[in-house]
Length: 125
Image 1 (spheres, rainbow, N blue to C red):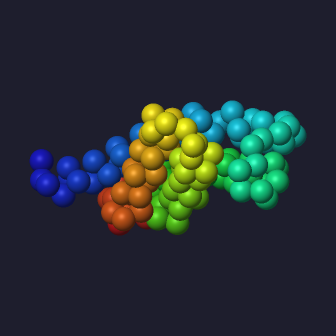
Image 2: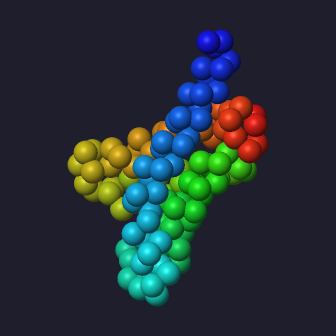
Image 3: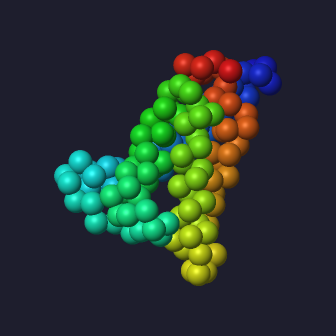
């Protein structure tokens, strides 16, 4: 296989797998949102409902765009921001082990932001 083909497959695998995995965290929040239950943490002081809405965008809606590779770089931003808030605000005083998963997701989606979606995407970059 050519190096460019391996790179394209690697980018597709990275963005799709990470998006599916983070959606497992966002799905329960999405269900909570559509059921009308807006009880949620409010670490930024903007209210529970807006915080839940932003978390759903970052952990469920934006990853759908990343899976398909549509507006990928833009779609990674809500996820990166959500994960940085989770790591440094929500889990700020917690030990590193509690922050680690959020930081790994922030890192992975930052790589996708920098490299783009690759050849196997709607954007095809």
